[in-house]
Image (cartoon, rainbow, N blue to C red; front, side):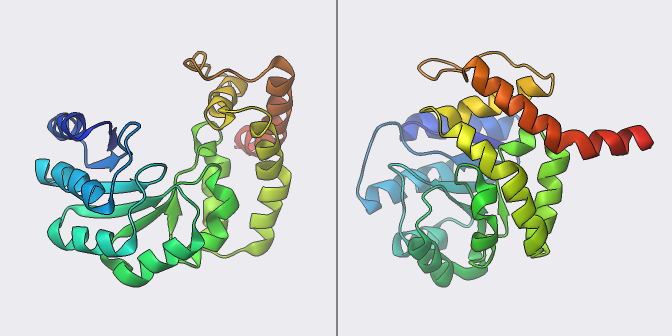
Length: 230
């Protein structure tokens, strides 16, 4: 179980300690809320969270918390429980510099929106896994796609992208904040409605929801048929 924590340093430390006490196996450290800083300040923030717990910490590199390779390497030397680096930036050059500098010292995770799009390219850079929003509502499909990526099955990956991921992205790109909204809409499509998104985000329009429903139903059809046959 990986628990998220973030905001300012004091709150992040408090959340991390609470997560460890509750039995979490690790921490995903999100960017400080609305605060930019120098590399040294960001590293000190991450180090404070690492020092507060004994479980592993994953640095989520995105937004106002982009740590570069030299500072990350120094931080990894000081913090044995800094175990992961999740990329939410999509800067290929930076990712290569990080991997070249730290190699197998960290586990690398793709954290870009609709990570399936980037999975094959990132695999070649040493990013062996990624967080899949699609998994929330189509777990069988998402696992099969991941297996195809790890097997470097170019044909299967391209089919998955063309048949589902790219049309899904086209719906996602119709509104700001839809990277979150479309995941809840996907859960609604498969009968696991968890309610509306929180403001200031907005839910998909009814026509967009219908478009997503049809796309998911088509992608899930082979799994339903297999379940019926079994």
